[in-house]
Image 1 (cartoon, rainbow, N blue to C red):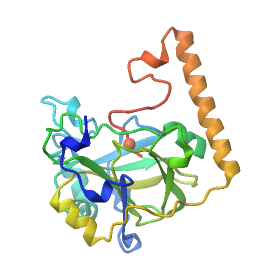
Image 2 (image 1 turned 30 degrees about the horizontal axis):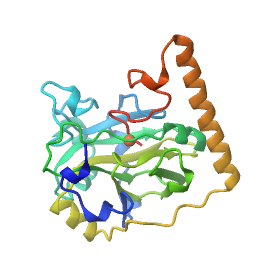
Image 3 (image 1 turned 135 degrees about the vertical axis):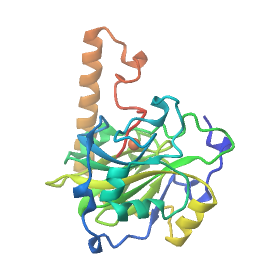
Image 4 (image 1 turned 90 degrees about the vertical axis):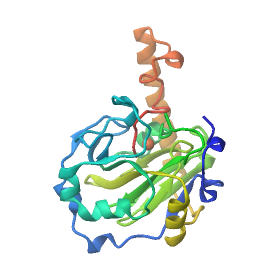
Length: 272
Ligand SMILES: [Fe+2]
């Protein structure tokens, strides 16, 4: 699957992400507290509240896992949660681009090394017809998590390719999560909530990014070298432990069934 076979936006070409103007989150009610969440396995300790799902049901499965399967476009609004979160729904709809999955994630606190272990790429464009828009994902942070960062890496195993985007309330970024390895490091005391929406690249999303003064490169949040080193060591120890567990079971981690690889690698329906 090659993005060159799809409609892509120049804003993502260099870095794979765009940071938009912040949103005045504090002026809005905490609608996410009124949503219905469903258990869904992703990287990290998470739950999700779907605003748009494959066929409008209160569930979060990848659109390709339904009958009939579909790509991550033409999401169907989930009436109960849309009624509970009209402002979040309007924000998701504001770009006017085709929307696939749209949901609020609840992420429990974690460590930097755990986030590194959770680094993965999304499978956003499965079944996406060539010649149509490449699917990217927007992250609108809802809770005020000033010490929390979105970790992005062009190369999972190369820390020099890492960018850390701060996630205070109202932070807004759109990321090519099929290109970039990503995970959130959330050192807070309480759960973090974030609105995540899949959008089709095209003129509507392009105009929206311009209207929000999107920038394709930001200064990464600084991190103490000792924290970086500890994080790498923890992530590696978790990968080693997983590989050993798989080996003890008789599985070759390099040729597992995909759900049991030595790390999260590419997950089919992961969030961050
Ligand atoms: Fe993801």
